[in-house]
Image 1 (cartoon, helix red, strand yellow):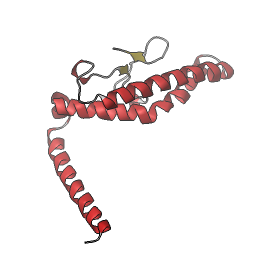
Image 2 (tube, helix red, strand yellow; image 1 turned 30 degrees about the vertical axis):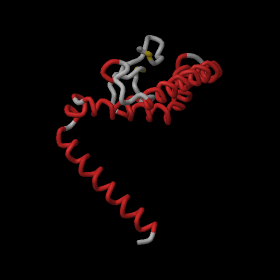
Image 3 (cartoon, one colour; image 1 turned 135 degrees about the horizontal axis):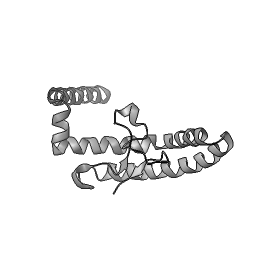
Length: 140
């Protein structure tokens, strides 16, 4: 067997194993995922990766928020600075959660930032997790 055929066969086998495991987990639904330690670990890993790769969304999100509160020039400047800060924070929290996903820190694998992802309405979290100024809350 040639090397590319061996790699393709191994990839197909891995995909079948993962698909069969995922189908049995889906049978239980969210209550199983949320109640098991392994499910909470997976959620923490997914949340961490989502924050690492989509943390930059905080920049346009904060510009938009400040723009609506004030005027366009102030919105771009103040929102841009806030957005860069929140993006860096979200990406750092995401990196921490990605690296420490097997460890229940904070307690019970809870998210360190609220909302847990930059676009909670896209990922299905309930709103509001914002303070009175419209900024995300951080809990430790």
